[in-house]
Image (cartoon, rainbow, N blue to C red; front, side, top):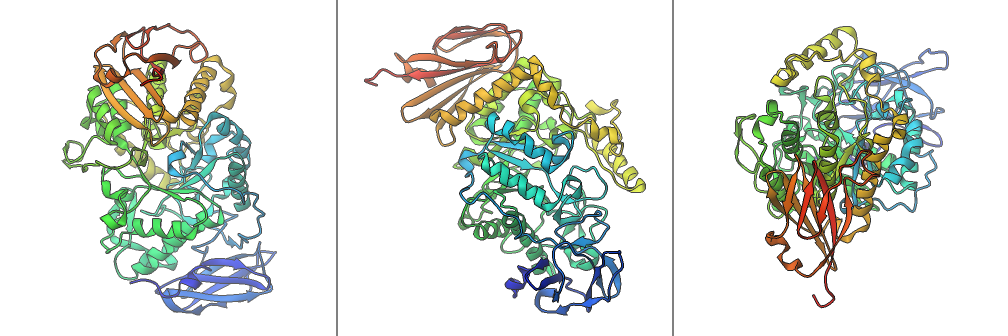
Length: 625
């Protein structure tokens, strides 16, 4: 059953106007909801009782106050609590809320038209660890680096305010308020505005499958938000299809619209969509995506699901029974390449092999498991993704989870030789899928990315215990002592060290990323939409062929060991007989490697690799062909 008062839901939270502030609180079981306005000296005035209206909403306009006013909410005499739709929590998630005027910021991005899916190269970042200062303002200063790198969108890890001063963001408690440790709401708006000025889209990771374990007062104000009978990996699941679920869904969808509309965001990444259990005729994910796009019709808003199930319905249109997401993360690409390059085969890597043909299958169709039995899940996993455009799959060599889920937070390039890392990076950036880099990947950052929290002592101890249990899924980690997530040094170690870019090794890796992304941007054969063919040349080597009208590129990627690779008998190259092969890039060029081991390259015939590496060829066909 849908809500009936859509116009009033627009005013959820506290919105100022010329005369005062309208307060609107969703409290579906409450008889009485009141607001306490906090004066300059910290004293509260008389409670202001809100008027109950439809959909479990309570509302009142209060004259004579405006932006900057602090206030709290009480429900049936319980409280006071922060506003569940607070747009800022200046004293943290347990403190009073602050009235923010979302219309007061003067945007300069009126000419911005966004970045559609076929232009995306994503760059995932954690605002607190991206710079030494860990603020929105400090991140703005680094945006020119990202624009010069060649990525086209930053994907910001969750910002919903959390308890303490350090968190990955998945313990969000105040879902509408940017975390105060990073700055004020207007600082995040400045970040988005500055990114748009440089041609960078901004996506946000949002979490609707659970609430943080401390400070989520929305449950006290609106208990039906939770479904006590549903458990997720991270806590109680949300009520998406039971009694009062129409209000739950509206609350979550309005939250998504708020982020996109009030902060001019270009995309949302929906965290752990398998935990969004919904038996409604229209799944929340489908409804949310459609309504977000409709709310911001002037530019493309890209929605991407993090979903391990390998379900093609995620990205199929609703008319075909799908959820109409624009894209989905491909866990299989990461897991397969990690298994190939590191040899790790426990935990969820147990489903993957060191067979390069499996990597080729993933590169061709988007994922490996398409209905086969998964040893790790002990059930069939996935379905056939035939017909789905490759750009709808997000490929990555690493992300916050895959790094941070290791006890010591090592990145892939800490585990393998630099030559293999260069080869894998080339593969990622020449494939037609949408690539994602994790912050610091571009220069092979030395800093790990560890799991960190700042909960109160008892909760922090339980989190650390849970972390230890999670690591028990991997025999590899049995003897590894993980840094305590609550210790400040665990967080400090995870911050990027920008000064190391000047070191020759890091400078070389940055140069490779820039060169590959420049080719992806400028070369029609390497853009999304160009045809692709993937072929296994030998147990260590893949061939990627990309074709666009008037342009053919052939990429040979050796992921392991030294050896000679013959191109003479490759059927996929038969039509290139008589064409001129011109080397566009190889990973042993001195600008990409401080101590190169030159390859022997006979264009179109053979390559002898002294170690793992990659070569990109431009193919010039005879004029008559």
